[in-house]
Image (cartoon, rainbow, N blue to C red; front, side, top):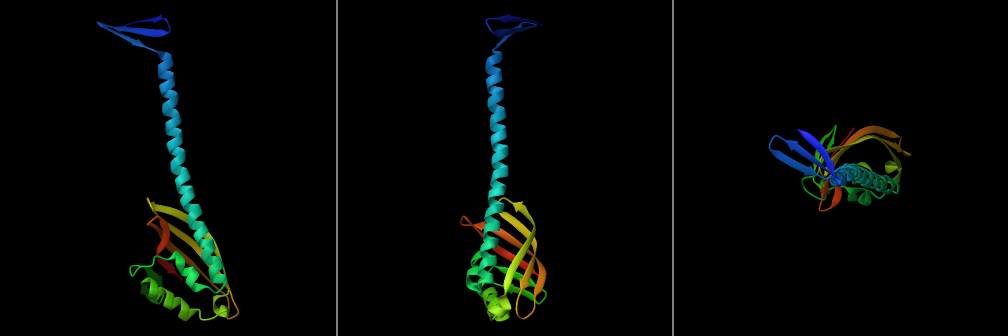
Length: 169
């Protein structure tokens, strides 16, 4: 095997074969490859961050709607489907309408809804287009404060993030 530089090219001889390479071309391809790898790695992280920000924005809208005693606006975050599931210590409520009815019955007045605050503990991707959120809720209200924990599952449906399952205690 012998190597000889010729006009910016490098010639390799190996047994009966001769290879000519352009180091500048190899460097350009390497730089292009590294840039593309960095872009796609950054894009994946940016996509997750975008998803998390969108979910946090929805949770903020929910918090504000609840604190304004607007349960219907609070429910806009939920999947409007009979497949929605809401789990509590009293059992499972199935469907959007039943979940809304449950909220309206359990929180009939502004004294019952009070002011809501969340403490988000984690937002974790389950699969592409689905996340679970774990956190704490804190209600300050006239009829007595209430605190608890929750886990909700968000899924992107028709381009919008919706809660498809909720468990609170």
